[in-house]
Length: 189
Image (cartoon, rainbow, N blue to C red; front, side):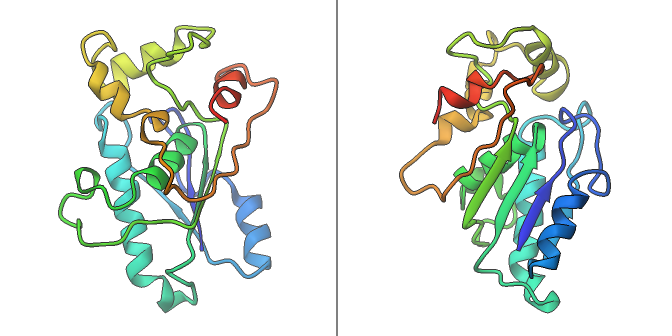
């Protein structure tokens, strides 16, 4: 099963708008592909997006066999905001904080393929070239500045959840990305 999470800066996007060529390609090779939506900011705030993605994953685990998929082999992918959520869903398997009301569902995945995603909302290495991400997070996604909500920024950063039991990752990032510098992916590999 391939679970696709759309990007769009946590503000825009829809499951029908992204990764269609990838899903067609994978479906031709026997994968069952599921593209999902999640609540968007500014109405939704962290961790609403991740909770929605994990809720969708829980549905997949419970129902995908009805569609010919294997609930024991789910790979998650997505770009930009979807890439950040891809990394987080893979790194926070079975974390009850992000599974309210469905804590008993196994949310482990067998692989993660995030692309051009921000992995460190705190920008610990000071590599973010512009204020764009910082302002987006402050005004729309988290709703507070990093200075006033460092713990929330830490929690929303995939880098903060890396552990030895994580599933395999294939990190994809272009060298000419003008929004999220490739160095932000390379530093953490």
